[in-house]
Length: 195
Image 1 (cartoon, rainbow, N blue to C red):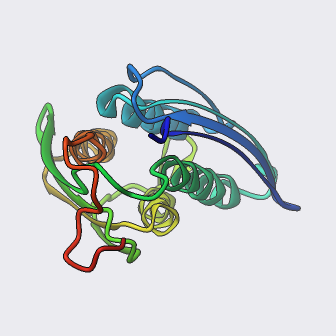
Image 2 (image 1 turned 180 degrees about the horizontal axis):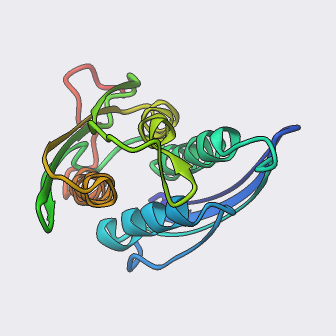
């Protein structure tokens, strides 16, 4: 049986990233991206999904936050995809709601093998904690692409953009926890027989 772990490096002219992941963990994370709010959001995914991961990134932040945010999501998503191995013996689907004070978010995930993201955060500020709000949405789209998953995320209410974004990441984490859960059935969870 697959130990559901992965270590990988992603290197380009824009970023150098190392990530290691354990799907069946305790939610422990060590994240250093150079963008404090991105670290905060990624740590929320680890904590509430039960996935352990370490992610270190050195990026071209002297340009802006885009390459670092995108490439960290691609590296993390690829690690999750690789850790799932042959995509057998796991739930596949997950959904969750998560509140954060006045904010409420919903996330639905399907490890279908077909990447798609529908993300509606409706953030109003230009940036939160050094992370452009447009890149928060882009992180989630990039994560879905690299995980080869369908991901729907909607923030249903909320006034504070920090709360709205964090509620979304917590809902994703809870949906991930469901979707990656091991099952007693060791087959591929698909009528097609492949994901």
